[in-house]
Length: 411
Ligand code: HEM
Image 1 (cartoon, rainbow, N blue to C red):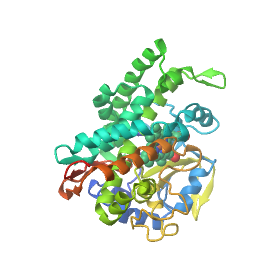
Image 2: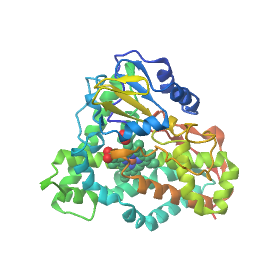
Image 3: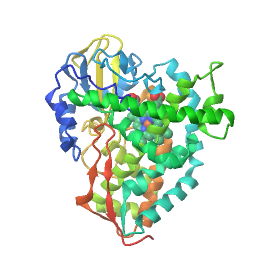
């Protein structure tokens, strides 16, 4: 969600040591000591054109500031070589952004999402039962990944049989959201461009099918939708489809995985949830704060200004460390403590804030809440296999590749 692989700092300026350290895969297990250091130092500019912000108040302020642009390609440090541009509305500014967002926001309204609860419940039950049948469930492969993927495919009208192709493209696009430096930058740009082209080609065929024979799905709805009396052109529809499909499953998979890991590492909290499944929604909020599935985003300054004592020039990229802001001790007492009873006075920033606040938040919350509730009710004596836990390489879309859990059957 940071950008389309072209939003991170380019490969020309020197890499500040502490940011290079963040990108080191050995820091995936626990990036928080480093994020805390970066937050405490922030706001600061490691080199011309980049300002790092990690305090909650300043991160929140930048996200809500209308003088900040979400169009990453306007940044002075934006890499020059990049794949084909897509106009997904994550990267548009108002008023254009407002018009596009309005088109799809109705489809993701909280009330509409709640009507999906029975179907989410049915899918999650089936996934948990078949996953646990062998005595060991891989929470990622068996539940966290397929549940949101099935639901977003169904909403969009994407045949679930195509999931393997979608998984491969999505994994490449998810990795491309990390800041890219040095030699890996060129390789990622080429791989990303190929994956994006394949994704767009896939949707182009599907859009043609729906144009010929509309159904009750989001693609058919987008084809009929109008912005100020004008229909969306095909490239806007394709960009929106890729955005929704991607944003709609990788992130939620990470949330569910991060949640179950945190719970199994805190057995007393897991026991509270198991005894009272109505705590599932509060648990989801605490996981979003404690281990944010989207760790960072960026904005570009349109006007000269300051953040704290740090000067901003037009075109400066502001790297916003959501994962660090969510553990800011000025806002959350004892921030490294996972506490499902925590009272969140100030909202966390896991879904961003302001004009680009996550459109899929109601769906993500609902899926994760149901997944946790059912995990607690159905899994008998779940035991983490610590040696099997592995993280994906991604820095920004933080999540697990594997989370094996032994169980004594299904309740
Ligand atoms: C935007 C996080 C799930 C669709 C965002 C942003 C964040 C985010 C941080 C804003 C980035 C920015 O301000 O630069 C998450 C997390 C999720 C999640 C943590 C799961 C736990 C979903 C789902 C969908 C979705 C399930 C769709 C079905 C979108 C869209 C935007 C967005 C369309 C762009 C909104 C705009 O630009 O106006 N998300 N997201 N997200 N998200 Fe999510």
